[in-house]
Length: 496
Ligand SMILES: NC(=O)c1ccc[n+]([C@@H]2O[C@H](COP(=O)([O-])OP(=O)(O)OC[C@H]3O[C@@H](n4cnc5c(N)ncnc54)[C@H](OP(=O)(O)O)[C@@H]3O)[C@@H](O)[C@H]2O)c1
Image (cartoon, rainbow, N blue to C red):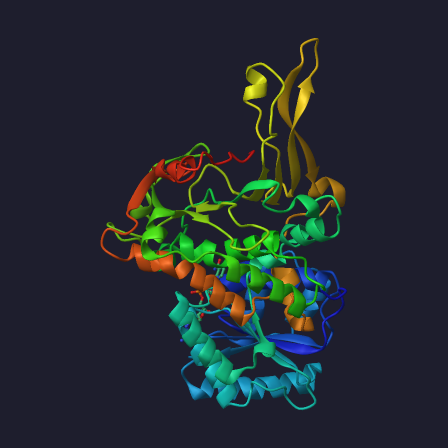
């Protein structure tokens, strides 16, 4: 990871400029960077999509969607350009080339390009290939780089990810490709690295001798919102586990890298992912639970069942919840269960990693409280209330010797007064500066798919991985408890 700096001169070309992601994530991230002086003065954005906007209409949208933008942002927006066109049409790319040349001339963008595929996945390969065909996969005159930022999802199973990679690699070299997983842009995800590798006290206990089990929870209280159609073809495993959970898992359990640069860090992540056990079809069914939410109450609000959401089939088989029991087959983690769960319409939005340590070998204290004492755990809270909590037993004041579980909490917000970020400003800035450390390399994507593919395959067989319903506002189907109870374990209830 390199020190923060201003981006070099460049043109950022957004494919999908009229879409939801551009409005909700990319433009606000650019405002944030502009306001903090991180964008070069020789910078512009060129939007490309079908909607028939003029330059001015696109500029208006950029000001509307990013209302918080200050004077710097307004000055930048004045030079934004827009190309209306279909990605399958050569004219779109001819026009884009013209606009890029004009940008180099008028705004000094210097032949440098960052293409952002913020569009629908079925056209990713087509756009990459068209860029190459038009010679846009290399820098313009005098330029130093042409990069391709790719949104998730990267494929919908192993084979489609490999096919997409083949197509993209025909157009761009791996060192030009920046695959986004916005979790990697979050401070608290990066803080897993600081916690583990900047402190001497944790590393000695970060292994099977001390850790009894690991639990990774990515809970959302929201349903599918207006994205039911998209979610129907994804499901929780593809939407969250293949990408975000695998990234968090890799950072939490990997070996210490010898450097925090793109090569060393990603080498260690891949090594860890390669050690995650790949189940047989029977094991995949046995070690997984798929769920779908029914109607219920989240917070104070009555919410509909998934099957009643807009864009969702009345007999949908898509999972909105998944729980897995994984294992990591290496010296450090052999035999330690790694439980993973994610779901929509759970009681709260919370992402956390809990390292649960072994119980003491012998408990000399008497009494009910002592018996109920929870084993020590270290909880890395990724969102919200980002921080780290250590849970341990403490003596209850009084004459009796009673012991009770308490926690020691570090809250990011109190220490650094930073507000939570969705990760986009950081990642966009890194891509524009050419730092690939927090982006997902081809072998990581491939390995993550190798891990989740057997579950998808097993579930698609008759009788494989039936769907279990849960009421919105609960922690998922009851059967997910059995996944842990078999080994004498239980799910943690995250502190809300
Ligand atoms: N939205 C989110 O919250 C979110 C979060 C994480 C990741 N993502 C990812 O971000 C990407 C974009 O998602 P989105 O929600 O922004 O999608 P979206 O709202 O449907 O936007 C798609 C964009 O692509 C353009 N487009 C699609 N096909 C085209 C074609 N053949 N030719 C020209 N333009 C075309 C659309 O242009 P027109 O509308 O003008 O036709 C529109 O600008 C997806 O990969 C998604 O998985 C989205």
